[in-house]
Image (tube, rainbow, N blue to C red; front, side, top):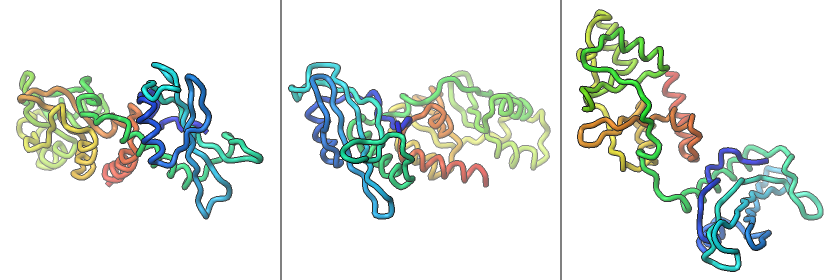
Length: 255
Protein backbone atom coordinates (compact mmCIF):
# COMPACT_ATOMS: atom_id res chain seq x y z
CA UNK A 1 0.00 0.00 0.00
CA UNK A 2 1.30 3.42 -0.94
CA UNK A 3 0.65 6.14 1.63
CA UNK A 4 -0.51 8.78 -0.83
CA UNK A 5 -0.54 11.75 1.57
CA UNK A 6 2.73 10.96 3.36
CA UNK A 7 3.96 14.52 2.81
CA UNK A 8 7.62 13.49 2.69
CA UNK A 9 7.79 13.00 -1.08
CA UNK A 10 10.20 15.49 -2.60
CA UNK A 11 12.02 16.36 0.63
CA UNK A 12 15.80 16.37 0.15
CA UNK A 13 18.56 15.48 2.61
CA UNK A 14 22.20 14.50 2.57
CA UNK A 15 22.82 10.80 3.18
CA UNK A 16 24.55 11.24 6.54
CA UNK A 17 21.70 13.23 8.09
CA UNK A 18 19.03 11.01 6.57
CA UNK A 19 20.77 7.96 8.05
CA UNK A 20 20.90 9.70 11.42
CA UNK A 21 17.24 10.74 11.63
CA UNK A 22 15.84 7.49 10.22
CA UNK A 23 17.93 5.47 12.68
CA UNK A 24 16.60 7.59 15.56
CA UNK A 25 13.06 6.67 14.46
CA UNK A 26 13.76 2.93 14.21
CA UNK A 27 14.45 2.62 10.47
CA UNK A 28 17.23 0.50 8.99
CA UNK A 29 18.81 1.31 5.64
CA UNK A 30 18.00 -1.91 3.83
CA UNK A 31 18.41 -2.20 0.08
CA UNK A 32 20.84 0.18 -1.53
CA UNK A 33 22.90 0.69 -4.64
CA UNK A 34 24.78 3.62 -6.15
CA UNK A 35 21.78 5.87 -6.64
CA UNK A 36 18.87 4.34 -4.68
CA UNK A 37 18.22 3.24 -1.10
CA UNK A 38 15.28 2.03 0.95
CA UNK A 39 14.71 2.48 4.67
CA UNK A 40 12.55 -0.03 6.56
CA UNK A 41 10.86 0.31 9.93
CA UNK A 42 9.33 -2.76 11.62
CA UNK A 43 5.79 -2.25 12.93
CA UNK A 44 4.26 -4.70 15.40
CA UNK A 45 1.34 -4.63 17.79
CA UNK A 46 0.09 -7.36 20.11
CA UNK A 47 -3.52 -7.04 19.00
CA UNK A 48 -2.59 -7.32 15.31
CA UNK A 49 -1.80 -10.55 13.52
CA UNK A 50 1.43 -10.42 11.55
CA UNK A 51 4.36 -8.07 11.17
CA UNK A 52 4.38 -5.01 8.95
CA UNK A 53 7.10 -2.77 7.58
CA UNK A 54 7.01 0.89 6.66
CA UNK A 55 9.35 1.36 3.70
CA UNK A 56 10.78 4.63 2.39
CA UNK A 57 12.17 4.84 -1.12
CA UNK A 58 14.92 7.37 -1.84
CA UNK A 59 16.93 8.39 -4.88
CA UNK A 60 20.28 10.19 -5.12
CA UNK A 61 20.12 13.43 -7.10
CA UNK A 62 23.66 14.60 -6.32
CA UNK A 63 26.57 12.21 -5.82
CA UNK A 64 26.43 8.48 -5.11
CA UNK A 65 25.66 6.56 -1.97
CA UNK A 66 29.26 5.74 -1.11
CA UNK A 67 29.53 9.40 -0.09
CA UNK A 68 27.86 10.69 3.10
CA UNK A 69 27.47 14.02 1.29
CA UNK A 70 25.26 12.58 -1.44
CA UNK A 71 21.92 14.38 -1.68
CA UNK A 72 18.86 12.12 -1.68
CA UNK A 73 15.25 12.94 -2.46
CA UNK A 74 12.50 10.99 -0.70
CA UNK A 75 9.98 9.25 -2.91
CA UNK A 76 6.95 7.11 -2.02
CA UNK A 77 6.31 5.53 1.37
CA UNK A 78 4.81 2.03 1.48
CA UNK A 79 3.39 -0.32 4.08
CA UNK A 80 3.65 -4.06 3.50
CA UNK A 81 2.95 -7.22 5.47
CA UNK A 82 5.80 -9.68 5.88
CA UNK A 83 5.41 -12.97 4.01
CA UNK A 84 7.47 -16.17 4.17
CA UNK A 85 10.38 -16.51 3.74
CA UNK A 86 11.35 -12.83 3.45
CA UNK A 87 9.30 -10.37 1.48
CA UNK A 88 6.60 -7.72 1.74
CA UNK A 89 3.04 -8.04 0.48
CA UNK A 90 1.85 -4.54 -0.45
CA UNK A 91 -1.66 -5.71 -1.34
CA UNK A 92 -2.67 -6.94 2.13
CA UNK A 93 -5.20 -4.81 4.04
CA UNK A 94 -3.47 -2.63 6.64
CA UNK A 95 -4.98 -2.56 10.16
CA UNK A 96 -5.96 0.94 11.26
CA UNK A 97 -3.64 0.83 14.28
CA UNK A 98 -0.65 0.00 12.04
CA UNK A 99 -1.60 2.73 9.60
CA UNK A 100 -1.86 5.24 12.45
CA UNK A 101 1.54 4.13 13.76
CA UNK A 102 3.01 4.62 10.28
CA UNK A 103 1.58 8.11 9.95
CA UNK A 104 3.02 9.05 13.30
CA UNK A 105 6.46 7.83 12.17
CA UNK A 106 6.17 9.77 8.93
CA UNK A 107 5.13 12.91 10.74
CA UNK A 108 8.14 12.65 13.06
CA UNK A 109 10.36 12.17 10.02
CA UNK A 110 8.72 15.15 8.32
CA UNK A 111 9.39 17.37 11.35
CA UNK A 112 13.06 16.34 11.46
CA UNK A 113 13.71 16.81 7.75
CA UNK A 114 11.48 19.70 6.78
CA UNK A 115 12.54 23.19 7.71
CA UNK A 116 9.91 25.25 9.52
CA UNK A 117 7.19 26.48 7.21
CA UNK A 118 5.62 29.89 7.48
CA UNK A 119 2.08 30.96 6.65
CA UNK A 120 3.33 32.90 3.61
CA UNK A 121 4.18 29.57 1.95
CA UNK A 122 0.64 28.20 2.28
CA UNK A 123 -1.63 31.25 2.32
CA UNK A 124 -3.99 31.82 -0.56
CA UNK A 125 -3.89 35.11 -2.42
CA UNK A 126 -6.97 34.23 -4.44
CA UNK A 127 -9.68 35.39 -2.05
CA UNK A 128 -12.77 37.58 -2.08
CA UNK A 129 -13.06 40.81 -0.09
CA UNK A 130 -15.65 43.47 0.63
CA UNK A 131 -15.36 47.14 1.54
CA UNK A 132 -16.92 48.89 4.53
CA UNK A 133 -19.56 50.32 2.17
CA UNK A 134 -20.71 46.89 0.95
CA UNK A 135 -24.19 45.89 2.11
CA UNK A 136 -25.09 42.87 4.20
CA UNK A 137 -26.82 41.53 1.11
CA UNK A 138 -23.58 41.92 -0.89
CA UNK A 139 -21.60 40.06 1.78
CA UNK A 140 -24.16 37.26 2.05
CA UNK A 141 -24.27 36.92 -1.74
CA UNK A 142 -20.46 36.63 -1.95
CA UNK A 143 -20.42 34.03 0.82
CA UNK A 144 -22.89 31.94 -1.16
CA UNK A 145 -21.13 32.46 -4.48
CA UNK A 146 -17.66 31.65 -3.18
CA UNK A 147 -18.69 28.99 -0.65
CA UNK A 148 -17.09 30.77 2.28
CA UNK A 149 -18.22 31.98 5.67
CA UNK A 150 -15.29 34.33 6.15
CA UNK A 151 -14.63 37.50 4.11
CA UNK A 152 -11.96 40.11 4.85
CA UNK A 153 -12.99 43.75 4.86
CA UNK A 154 -10.54 46.13 3.20
CA UNK A 155 -10.10 49.81 2.57
CA UNK A 156 -7.98 49.82 -0.56
CA UNK A 157 -5.13 47.46 0.42
CA UNK A 158 -5.52 48.13 4.13
CA UNK A 159 -7.04 45.37 6.22
CA UNK A 160 -9.95 46.63 8.34
CA UNK A 161 -11.48 43.46 9.78
CA UNK A 162 -13.65 40.54 8.69
CA UNK A 163 -17.28 39.68 8.30
CA UNK A 164 -18.46 36.13 8.98
CA UNK A 165 -21.65 34.14 8.71
CA UNK A 166 -22.01 34.55 12.46
CA UNK A 167 -21.69 38.34 12.15
CA UNK A 168 -24.47 38.36 9.56
CA UNK A 169 -26.69 36.14 11.66
CA UNK A 170 -26.10 37.57 15.15
CA UNK A 171 -25.35 41.25 14.60
CA UNK A 172 -27.12 41.57 11.29
CA UNK A 173 -30.37 39.81 10.55
CA UNK A 174 -31.08 38.70 14.15
CA UNK A 175 -31.07 42.39 15.12
CA UNK A 176 -33.38 43.11 12.19
CA UNK A 177 -30.76 44.97 10.21
CA UNK A 178 -31.80 45.69 6.64
CA UNK A 179 -30.04 43.87 3.84
CA UNK A 180 -28.98 47.32 2.64
CA UNK A 181 -27.17 48.04 5.94
CA UNK A 182 -23.45 48.41 5.33
CA UNK A 183 -20.88 45.90 6.52
CA UNK A 184 -19.42 48.67 8.71
CA UNK A 185 -22.29 48.07 11.17
CA UNK A 186 -21.42 44.43 11.86
CA UNK A 187 -17.72 44.12 11.07
CA UNK A 188 -15.53 42.13 13.46
CA UNK A 189 -12.53 44.37 14.08
CA UNK A 190 -10.93 42.54 17.00
CA UNK A 191 -9.90 39.59 14.89
CA UNK A 192 -6.69 37.61 15.03
CA UNK A 193 -4.24 38.18 12.20
CA UNK A 194 -0.71 36.91 11.64
CA UNK A 195 2.37 38.13 9.81
CA UNK A 196 3.71 36.22 6.78
CA UNK A 197 6.65 34.82 8.77
CA UNK A 198 4.37 33.34 11.46
CA UNK A 199 5.04 29.57 11.86
CA UNK A 200 2.46 27.51 9.96
CA UNK A 201 2.16 24.89 12.69
CA UNK A 202 1.40 27.58 15.27
CA UNK A 203 -1.21 29.11 12.96
CA UNK A 204 -2.96 25.74 12.68
CA UNK A 205 -3.01 25.30 16.45
CA UNK A 206 -4.31 28.86 16.91
CA UNK A 207 -7.18 28.33 14.45
CA UNK A 208 -8.23 25.12 16.16
CA UNK A 209 -7.87 26.41 19.72
CA UNK A 210 -9.84 29.60 19.06
CA UNK A 211 -12.20 27.99 16.53
CA UNK A 212 -11.30 30.49 13.82
CA UNK A 213 -12.69 30.25 10.30
CA UNK A 214 -9.48 31.71 8.95
CA UNK A 215 -6.52 33.94 9.62
CA UNK A 216 -5.77 37.09 7.64
CA UNK A 217 -2.07 37.42 6.82
CA UNK A 218 -1.20 41.08 7.34
CA UNK A 219 2.01 43.08 7.11
CA UNK A 220 2.24 46.79 7.90
CA UNK A 221 -1.54 46.99 7.85
CA UNK A 222 -1.81 45.52 4.35
CA UNK A 223 -3.74 42.31 3.70
CA UNK A 224 -1.43 39.89 1.87
CA UNK A 225 -3.45 36.68 1.99
CA UNK A 226 -5.69 34.31 3.93
CA UNK A 227 -4.97 30.97 5.53
CA UNK A 228 -7.74 28.52 6.46
CA UNK A 229 -7.81 24.90 7.59
CA UNK A 230 -10.09 24.06 4.68
CA UNK A 231 -7.56 25.46 2.19
CA UNK A 232 -4.73 23.51 3.78
CA UNK A 233 -6.75 20.32 3.62
CA UNK A 234 -7.77 20.90 -0.01
CA UNK A 235 -4.15 21.49 -0.97
CA UNK A 236 -3.15 18.17 0.67
CA UNK A 237 -0.78 19.82 3.10
CA UNK A 238 0.65 16.98 5.20
CA UNK A 239 0.67 17.24 8.93
CA UNK A 240 -0.40 14.52 11.34
CA UNK A 241 -1.60 17.11 13.83
CA UNK A 242 -3.39 18.98 11.06
CA UNK A 243 -5.39 15.87 10.33
CA UNK A 244 -6.51 15.73 13.95
CA UNK A 245 -7.10 19.49 13.92
CA UNK A 246 -9.33 19.24 10.87
CA UNK A 247 -11.38 16.62 12.69
CA UNK A 248 -11.88 19.04 15.55
CA UNK A 249 -12.59 21.85 13.06
CA UNK A 250 -15.33 19.78 11.43
CA UNK A 251 -16.85 19.15 14.86
CA UNK A 252 -16.86 22.87 15.62
CA UNK A 253 -18.47 23.82 12.32
CA UNK A 254 -21.28 21.33 12.82
CA UNK A 255 -22.19 22.74 16.21
